[in-house]
Image 1: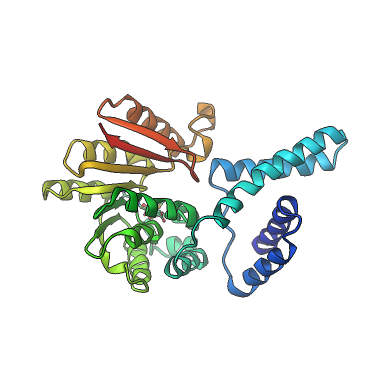
Image 2 (image 1 turned 90 degrees about the vertical axis):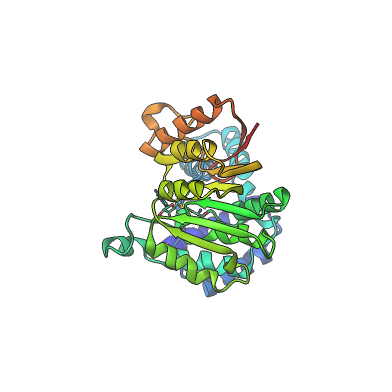
Length: 307
Ligand SMILES: C[S@@+](CC[C@H](N)C(=O)[O-])C[C@H]1O[C@@H](n2cnc3c(N)ncnc32)[C@H](O)[C@@H]1O
């Protein structure tokens, strides 16, 4: 069912956004059919959710007595929205083979079974993986900041860790915090397939414990990527700023700071994580030690620097 949905979606998007791209579409579908057995991830970003809502609104309008003018307008809005992410993906530098393999392995894993069998400590899901465009963005930040030491808080199967490691110099180092031992060894197996994997060391423990240990040892990092437990974001942020974990001139990147749009939707529509991120954004905005910007990339990425 997921595969049918994906193909219908591909056809619709290509048909609606690039009328002359039929050959390209054919090869994309063939490639998809022959190389993949993965489940289609659900929409987990404000933009992805918006496109899904627009698609169902358009279908509703087509099957009801809607005026031609409204239908044309809706079709235009849908094309504009649905074409954006595929376009960005297509014109962003391709990910490495090791990252493609890691993403495919993540999407074919039965995460619900791993959890029900007690192999993972919590329910993990393929949607946690940041992916191509965000990975390439993080990689770009590592290059731009000339970072030699990177800290990741929340690694999952290692996509963002490996993407950033690819941009580190040969003597660069990335420390990744991950609480789940199963997913940590899953990631480490993937790192072995990359020439950059040996730059990554994994700390399997609750992130706050690792952050405090690293701070006590006087370690510091040029770039810190926060992507673990949303309810702990404020504590990660304070632990980092109250210690010397962030090197002078260092950059903090924080994922999911738009939390599917919940941060600007009414409070009743916020999940526990939505409330946590809303509070986190307020804490950062009120902290006079830093300046920050929220990028509308995927589920929102905040860049923070100490003033
Ligand atoms: C959203 S995923 C990370 C995705 C990854 N950064 C990527 O881009 O592919 C969050 C990860 O944080 C881990 N995590 C959650 N709470 C944690 C904690 N308190 N300490 C360390 N890791 C934690 C989860 O097990 C999960 O693997």
